[in-house]
Length: 127
Image (tube, rainbow, N blue to C red; front, side, top):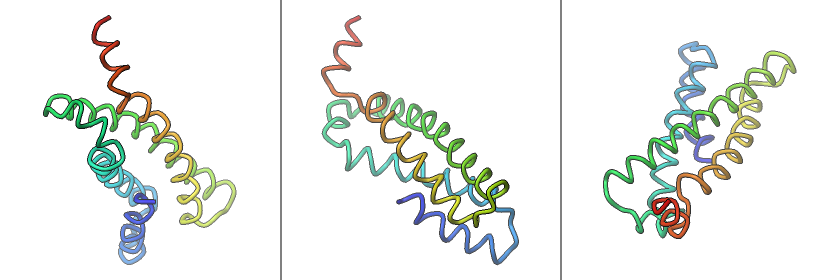
């Protein structure tokens, strides 16, 4: 939902300046990726983040999160495009559907890769 709340001002600006909806959606998605990382790092997964708080590990998590969310962004934008161009649904509703698809992907994959449990991390570094 953070993505949707960031998208609304972007779409309002899109309407007033006539920006192509795919460009405004891309900007909204990147802003959402950054804000979602910060929220996940300091709130949702703070217990896991606090186990590995150094800058290098936090930066690695940020890179992993961005790569995973970039795939989520592709899912979001593809859903937006297909539903708007081929199904004829208004771009705001299409984007809401894309946000839902991408959110499920992002949370599921990031839970198991970016913020894996401390035990799994220890076992991986010993191998």
